[in-house]
Image (cartoon, rainbow, N blue to C red; front, side, top):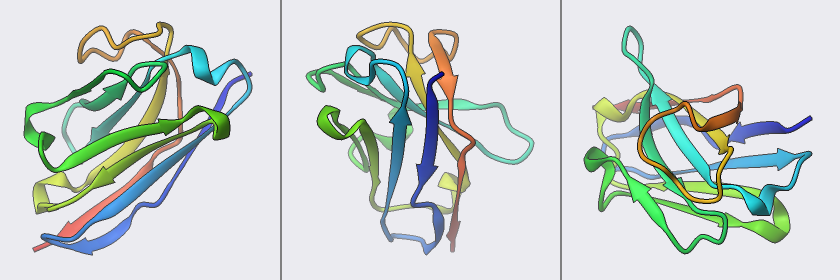
Amino acid sequence: QVQLVESGGGLVQAGGSLRLSCAVSGGTFSRYAMGWFRQAPEKEREFVAAISWSGGRTDYADFVKGRFTISRVNAKNMVYLQMNSLKPEDTAVYYCAQSAFAAPRGSGSREYDYWGQGTQVTVSS
């Protein structure tokens, strides 16, 4: 069974940075694309970023381009989300997810089979 555990969330002031980590166990991590999503209170879950199996391709939501960077280390079964220039509107629970495919196929969540429990990110103004 594949398990994903996020960490690295917390409280940060606007303009600050956080690095989220996602540890994946079970399955074959290096074969699949990984994604980050977020959900703010009373809002729908939304796509943030995704990375292909090799790390050679990354996709980002427009609202994080230039501020967030997704990366992965296959040897460690880890995926990361470096978040810079954080804004209060970035406040949400952030989830990592493992895709059923080797490369991202868009911003939808249906391609993702496995999800972590989420980590809270709060950005104060």
